[in-house]
Length: 415
Ligand SMILES: Cc1cc2nc3c(=O)[nH]c(=O)nc-3n(C[C@H](O)[C@H](O)[C@H](O)COP(=O)(O)OP(=O)(O)OC[C@H]3O[C@@H](n4cnc5c(N)ncnc54)[C@H](O)[C@@H]3O)c2cc1C
Image 1 (spheres, rainbow, N blue to C red):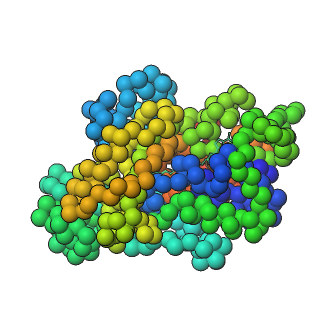
Image 2: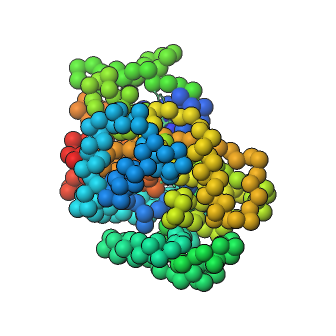
Image 3: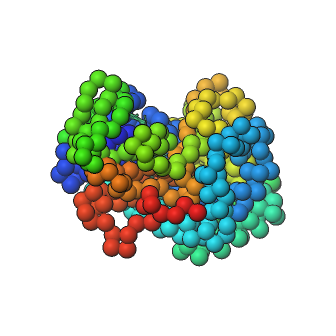
């Protein structure tokens, strides 16, 4: 059994498969686990905000901000033709009824996934410091508060626990917000959300997997899949032929390129996001928990001795370049949140490509070639959904697929 991709999804999948007693190898073209999209993401494990991006509001904002470098959601005009059918399907999923249906599926799955993650830690399968205490969203004007109240209604309908806060309680809960206390109108605590460094988690899972004899081949690139008589028989790398009866593709945004030569179309689009990571010793403080600033469309997360600031959405194809203007947006946003903060010289700027499907749900399925599986397309929620996805992928491979089927099939309607 070979798992292709050692991001947070692939590494977790390898661990779950090895727990079944299977002989598992992982390959990744990077030199270690979690070095691509899973490397410096927002760090949130957030069932409370596990909604698809295709929403009535997102569509309006995307159209309003086409081509604007300072916008949190940027659609580069040259990227529009490439969106093609994917873009039409994304737009179709922005209908309120579709958004609600998909949100129900995702929040339920994300809750199960966090339970799985808690289980791995409780059973001491992995040694990992998962942050607890909830996610705090802040609001700065009456329009923001009205949006919060509509959001709370939606979350309560999805059985998600919420606590609405006035401005004073928000600052008492999070003293690092004291400098902007006078501009706050209120907050929202989502008490069950968690956080942690997805790269460190991928490394911790790698360590646990090796103890179960998973072989990790880093610096090893899949060149092509080998199919014989309609069955997968292995894969070719630049150096060698690796034989396998089962292959699971967990290649994140690269998944379509790996399956395309076999005639398998997978609707996954790369959607770029950026982060910066500031050292506590440089900025002199860390907030107690992640904070999402509704106005600036960013999130800040304390991760060990660093503050991660992540956000921005850019439809720009497979271009991983770090554009200074997008980093400036993150700097501006974090300064608006913590006005007294001195911006350090070392920002550790980073950009990653979210593997996004048009309906925001991952694809976790057996595909038409016997022995070939895919666990990919987790968009903005790969860390949140990794453990649940690994469990479901393993159940499908082991022939234990849930009786009610899976909403994550490749053959589902993406409209
Ligand atoms: C700015 C930003 C913030 C985010 N914040 C959050 C967050 O707060 N919470 C959350 O849940 N999610 C977040 N995400 C989303 C999350 O990071 C992704 O969904 C997740 O990392 C996807 O994991 P993956 O394992 O599928 O992909 P990846 O991490 O990209 O792993 C795929 C692996 O496949 C390998 N690969 C590809 N092609 C080949 C090949 N031919 N041969 C060998 N190996 C190959 C790659 O090298 C890579 O290591 C964020 C994303 C971004 C960009």
